[in-house]
Length: 95
Image (cartoon, rainbow, N blue to C red; front, side, top):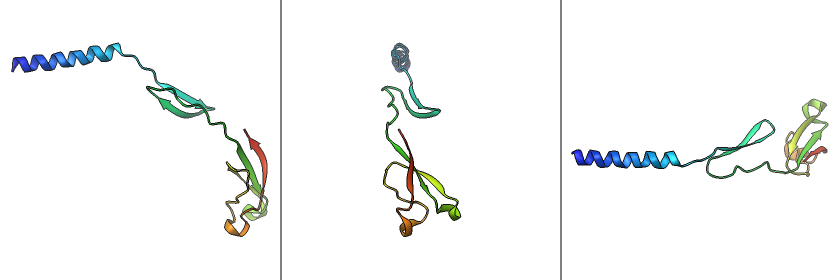
């Protein structure tokens, strides 16, 4: 029993020594105020440089107009479905 306990403690101490000599860093990447990725053993990925299109439909919200964001330049109106799928225009491109 004493030998088993001694072997378990020796193994535990070996792990303590092993982990106390290892070093690692926590790598975090922010885009603006938003945390995009956290990585422990690898480098965190950066921001994705995609264009975002600000699109506008003047007839949405009872003709008050409404904006939405899209990853595509082609207008696909989320307000009227298939009836007016292409109603709207690109107002701004965010890069």
